[in-house]
Amino acid sequence: MNVIFLDIDGVVNTFQISTEPFNIKGEVKRDGFYYLLCNESSGCVSNRQSIMWLNKLCKDTNSHIVISSSWRSSNNVDECLYNSGLLKDIKILGSTPMIYSKENIRGVEIDVYLKEHPEINNYIILDDDNDFLPEQQEHLVQTSTNVGFTMNDYYKALEILND
Image (cartoon, rainbow, N blue to C red; front, side, top):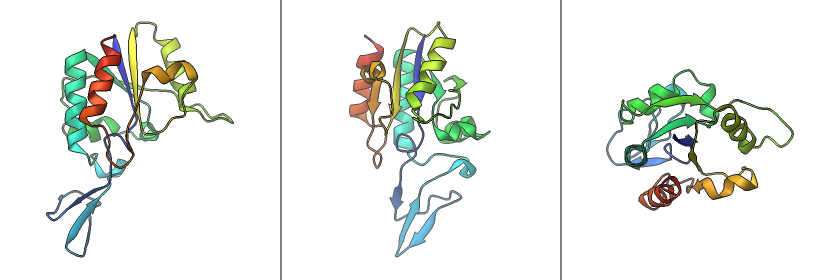
């Protein structure tokens, strides 16, 4: 089984700007422009283009999603993703455990999840941060915080998951 450990902010939720309203809770209008950065209570994520690349990656690699974001403490993170265009047949398996330690390394949480799920054959980590264990670096696709998951990131992730 292929798994995508998905961070939200900086991957599928990035700062957006438009001259047209987004018609989403949380948008702000200033100087003729509309600005949007969603949060858990918005019921969505803001970067729908990144969601489309995520859809394609999941379909092309038969991958499932595990939420590794701080959003995982929210009860509606699945709903936010599906409301934003994540295909309904893409399975969200759950989330990594929240482990509080001195290091507070997200990689430790992923490591615990992987040890509890030996059925996972291959994985990638989609994240704009880099707080992962050395052995996880080859599985990391680090996105640009302001841009999110792009076509170039898709190809890098595809290569890792098809390896």
